Image (cartoon, rainbow, N blue to C red; front, top):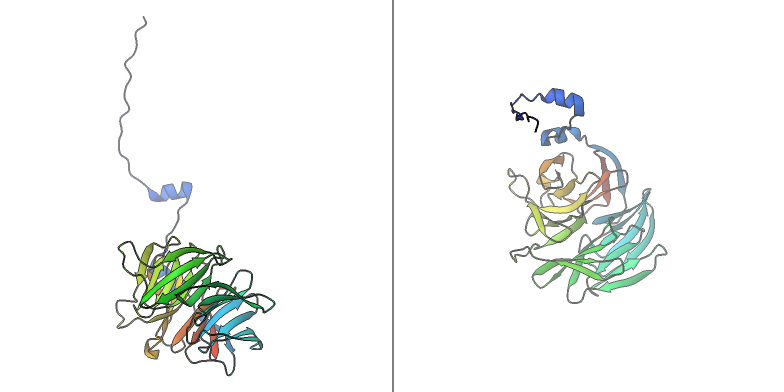
Length: 308
């Protein structure tokens, strides 16, 4: 047998890591800090839409230049950006705020608290009952742009929940409590959805924003900046970047502002401060040009801001 040489094992010696040299070879990704994000938003008022003799409470936008608006008496109007009313519908909704939404197909959905039902208004302006909510009173509603599902906030006695329906009105999901059995909602005024499927609500009784996953699991809540004496969230919406925008100051014009959060609930900045924000901000929505629409309480005027 031939002689076999004894192999030599490799020896490890620790070297120095030069991040710049690695970056030259592979490139690098820079993660923006909260301060960077604060500096990157420049807010500018670009438009103002007024519907005379109509107290706007909530808005649902239609591409490219129309929108639905409601007052606190159950009246719904379809308008053009030129402030011309195209259509008017009377409902039994009363003083609820976020009681209408628009589907991906441009159909209007609204809640009826007396009949405890959800109605659909098609493009021909025919209103048909889509589903009943039984013993539960439907309040706020949102139509998902992700899958067309319908999210409805409803209450019964002292309880409140979010119910998910498909486009045909079939019940898919109930969201009411967290894993410990504690109620998630006390008094939800507005509801919306983020692009990752998170369901975002503004709770004016609990004074916080509550966010759950698309499966209904509690993710986080936001109760305003620590320096604030009081946080009273109302209108809420999300943008194409996944930011959560929520209005504050519904009951106090001296603290009127719009908070900008990331999709994980971290405060980024006051998008609109007291000096910029209309008093008693209520409804918020993002249009198809990524502009922010904001309406103040007891007003027939909607202010439009560009921030991205």
